[in-house]
Length: 258
Image (cartoon, rainbow, N blue to C red; front, side, top):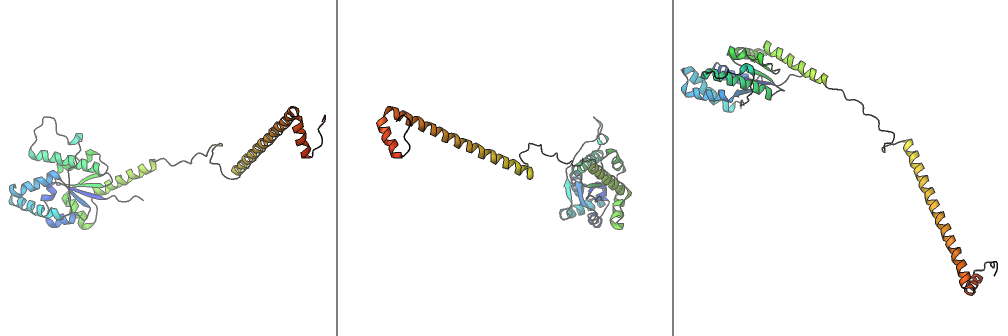
């Protein structure tokens, strides 16, 4: 049975500025929350230069909330044809921010393949680009959908569909892995042979060693006997008197011709 992957919530500027501290705290119930570095820098910019007082207030509240929130910043970045501006095109600050966030979203999903990355935004142009990225662990929802998910415990349809796709891709990867095959038996002349055959082979080798040793001993004794006979014969002819005295002391029968 496939397990549900960890959820990573990646939020953009619109999802932050359209929420309150209470709602930011609730987001963390779904999973770990992340913010693109460029979005945090923009929020810091808005703390003193927002065009509306309410935006400036929200930006200041978030900068006070963030250090103790457990949220993390990410500088992930990846390029995709559907989120690249045309060469030579002059973009406004807002358009450049959208492109940067989209590239961060795509890169963050690639850097965390074992997580389901849920991108949260109220900007339809950027949400509409998510399916075209064909990233199996990435989906996009609005802030309203995220709040409903937190409070009702019911996943948004986009999240449910992506979880099914995510699980199916994991199952396919598991099935496609080759099954381990039995190892080939060792060759007949393998030195690791054990059992009765090994015992018989050891006994034969021991008998062969014993026979070789006995042959060497007999051969050595025969050689010594031949040398002794030759020596005695030479002694008899060279010094017959001395040899006769020695032979008489041995008590052996007299030699022929003596």
